Amino acid sequence: MGRHAWQVNNPDGKFRVIVTKALPGRRWLDVLTASDCRVEVCQSKSVLDTETIRLAIGRRCDGAIGQLTEPWGETLFEALKAAGGTAYSNYAVGYNNVDMDAANRAGMPVGNTPGVLTETTAEMAVALTFAAARRVGEAERYLRAGRYTGWLPDLFLGTLLQGKTLGIIGAGRIGAAYARMMVQGHGMQLVYHDLATNSDLESLVADLSLFRVSHRQSPVACRRAESLEALLEAADCVSIHTVLNEATHHLIDARRLAVMKPDAILINTSRGPVIDETALVDHCRRHPDFRAGLDVFENEPALAPGLTELDNVLLVPHIASATRWTREGMAVLAACNVAGILAGYPLWRQPDILPFLAEDPPCAIPSIVNADALGKLNRRS
Image (cartoon, rainbow, N blue to C red; front, side, top):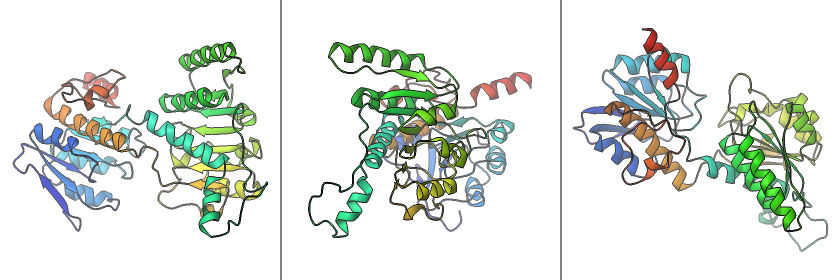
């Protein structure tokens, strides 16, 4: 299987499943081996290219678990289909690395891992928000460099977020969870931009406002912005929680950065290419009071030239979902997707996937993103 080492588990299993990275925890592996799978796990930490994965699929392969860093397209789905494969799961909630048209043409179900990243990713967005607002990265570098000589009245003056306006781009599960944390904890006024109205979020903020007023605190409000520009103009802090597709690629570009307040804060824990990184570097150079907190990057792992030189940009290496509970839960869901397909289980089709993390998981497939598309194709054939 090429120059990379692969660890074989349950070598006499009926179904052959390849996993392109070692995953956290043990339970995901137990799920697959209990389903009579021979599980071959790549031990390399480097990103596998398409040819390496194609060779690993080989002549017989029933299923695969891949990574968001790998381009799963026609070559791999056709190879998996030719090898007798019927199951693929992305080890991620997002699937912009997957060519869904190619998967549909190959009749390949594509699993993902929703529901266990929500609070974890929202918490990281909160962490980045306050670290950027209070200049934590700058201050730590200053201290570690031995430059701290004592308290000063104007040392690393940051931004107070209490009561300010928060803008959310994408009010789905993660965006709404982040909004709740910020509005409930810090009395921020909320404006969001989304294709659909989030009535639950608006109702929650309205109820919270009544509670705050009853306790002699200032009211809070939530409204949906008619345009992205309207949100960017109004918000003191903007957090991105949208999916990545053709419409959202470079959604935040030079023109839209110019609309934002010169001392605004921009947070991204969604996907890197939503921001034009080169434009962001230029904007942050020209606006030193502007702050950004980034967990994802346009061309990971590479960063745009100049990004690491900017003190007003906080950078972390794609760790928004990096809690042990979440990453192990993602592994279990990915394994349940593959095992469920191989066993012929029905699709779960319920929003709460936490039962799959319990001791006795349902006999179902947690999440297949192209289930409806495959159903339509099957009905036509």
